[in-house]
Image (cartoon, rainbow, N blue to C red; front, side, top):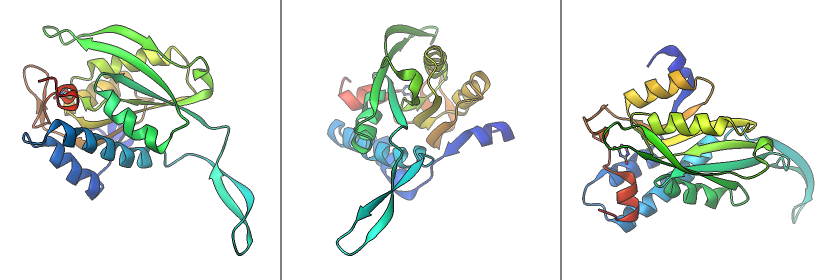
Length: 215
Ligand code: URA
């Protein structure tokens, strides 16, 4: 990675995340287990990605004393955007931690021959301009879908944007950082390379299929 990319990319190396990611990668891990693991890892990723959320202080009464205690600033509003369909797993996990966040969906599929993303669905909350956006997609492979989705989402003018994935290929990071140097990228691992079909190696296979049991 270049210095600029190092500044843009956060590799989240927490041991719990790394352990769970290894379980997800294992070919023998069942759909049920995989789904639970995505949820658990997403909760942990959300913790890191929301590290900069502002706090305000309000006076509360504990059983023993009055104190000035921190709470999340109420005017800080979030929108989580899932890139369908595999983004759903991360979305479900993050929503457990941030239940009042609004949700958007971007539907893209990769043309199997060209690997170019085609948009088939797009819906975000009407007040997206007043929200900070977290875009989620488990696999940053070629980066084509992520780059296209972020491009489309930028046209809705959210206050800020971050992109979160579980696994990234160096090729995907390169592509994403070149296209969107202003969007911080969070990943739990950077793998070795892409194969000729655009799959991340060693990776974990097709995240959508593993999440939904479609293969
Ligand atoms: N999408 C996936 O689900 N897996 C990959 O390895 C690449 C793209």
